[in-house]
Amino acid sequence: MKTTLTLLGLAAATALVAGCSTYDKGPYPPQPSKTPAYETTERFVLLDPGAQRSVTCAALHERTLPDGRLEVIAQIRNRENRRIEVQANCVFKDGNGFTTGDETPFQTVILTENATEQVTFTSMNALAKKYTIRVRQAR
Image 1: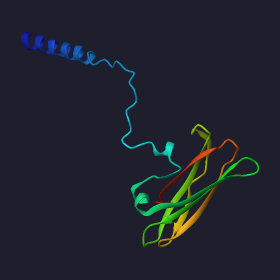
Image 2 (image 1 turned 90 degrees about the vertical axis):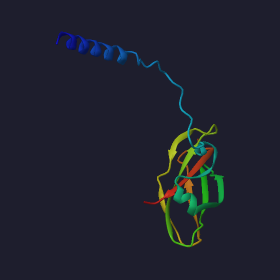
Image 3 (image 1 turned 135 degrees about the vertical axis):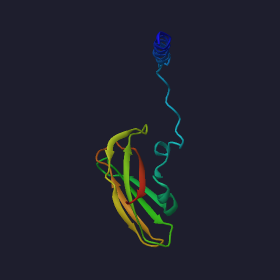
Image 4 (image 1 turned 180 degrees about the vertical axis):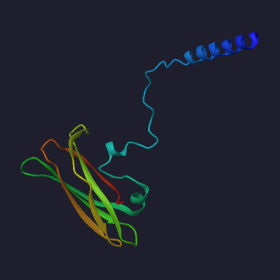
């Protein structure tokens, strides 16, 4: 009986010491993403596989308004022979590619078979120099 208690005590002490030996030595560098950071490099991105299969960007037009704000017009094209609904928004960025805090809400775009629709986005301030239009399937 005494031997059993001694062995249990020894096992508990070993477990405590072993638990302390897994000391986290952090900090760690960030892990690389499995997908490229397209939102930082591209002007038009598709956010899910359904949108990637069904939608393309036919054209982008940008202009600076007289008050310095940026206006962007995207022609979104349905690549399929069926009616689809997508949602699009625009994130406006400064000259270095960082967001200005100006992001439009997602708006629903209904695309009939093989149709092209124009969607217009306007920045709220004159800080915007770049942008990323993001499109996803409507749920």
